[in-house]
Length: 333
Image (cartoon, rainbow, N blue to C red; front, side, top):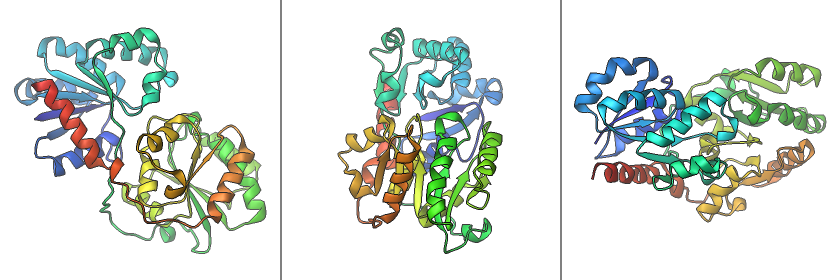
């Protein structure tokens, strides 16, 4: 089966890119190419001749394709990665259009379906399913001394947070929670990997709280660097207000990190779906609206022994890949 993965812009750290890379290496059934919205009109002839299915991952790119698809008549799949509650009016209208005309809709967790308005649920009543995101569980990455590169001392207690600087990631409350830990132990360092529109607000809060030596803004980092930090950090921290299905969370679990995440359904549900015990996975849940609880959760997690014996194959990319192979196969049957 020949597929296009359609996105707004191509990034080698994005979820669609990582899926395409993995599927091309490991599936005997799938051949996947990445196409951005900017290149879509240039690829129409190729899509008409040599593509079986177009699988969209971003609202604007997929909506544009479905207009063009009136003439191409190609099978289409759309994966919902984020919550309807955080969409602009324009993107909500485009998602409505996608639901109406795409052949199959996939949600990366049940909550993304649950929060939809009833009229949108009716549009996809017989054509949606839920496939949890997977991650690589047999990691192959370039080993490097990221602590040395980013001037992190070996004696520091390192908390790692890779995420966009947007409100739903809860950076400001997380940094306030950090303050009480730093007052007890000046060796604690929070590493923020990412960028976004809240960067200035985050920088101002760091200065206001006097945490310039304890919060390090790494900027955008390479995927291999993320894995190196996950391997070495003392704690993975993600007290988000909302999520799709956070890939970094699953990666942190599969690399046996100590993990502190919010007790929202998007984090709780995947473990329940797989029948996994949070304690066996080094996972601590906290209320993302209470910075004191976040602080206590971080302190408690740091005091626990890091368990390394559990099997994370249930949420592997290979398991997810086979489920998507089934989706594509049924569309073409």
